[in-house]
Image (cartoon, rainbow over all chains, first blue to last red; front, side, top):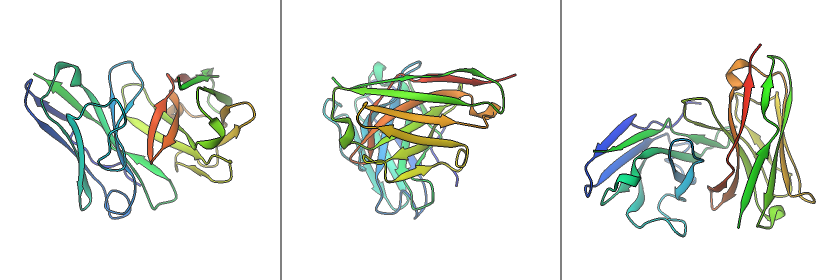
Length: 111
Length: 117
């Protein structure tokens, strides 16, 4: 089973909005399965940013939002800030014998 | 404060074994599902195993099934990963992570496993 597909990199200027896509199949992202997003700064553990497609944990800025259409989930970051520069990973539960799969990760650069 | 602290990593020869531990505190451990996730140097995240709150349900990634065993001791607030028949490609930082609402809401800082002769 392949990882979910994410762009390797995205970039944006401070104050702009960016969207990171996460494409799977009808057995994971496209089904009624949990989709979540994680932020990881260098040398740090991942941090949950979005769960169950569009929900933000307490303490996560409302500049982060999630959505899904068909087999593709998306993370949008509005009002980009320097501290948003990090790697971002999507994840989904799956109908396969494994339970969870991650995307390959997207490096966000704030110009 | 929720804390997850992994231990047990180290250098091991190919074919060898290691047992990782994750000590949990700051929450009711027995009520939560838990996972192991790893990250090879310079690479992305790879989910490798899940265990339900009671331990009755267990899942593995194809890459480790048959070699790794996840377990937990709710009386000791601890999660474990027994890793056998280790390969060079198992070299990674291993994280334990708590499940909540389908997401992994708390992560430890990881323990490094290096498989090399």
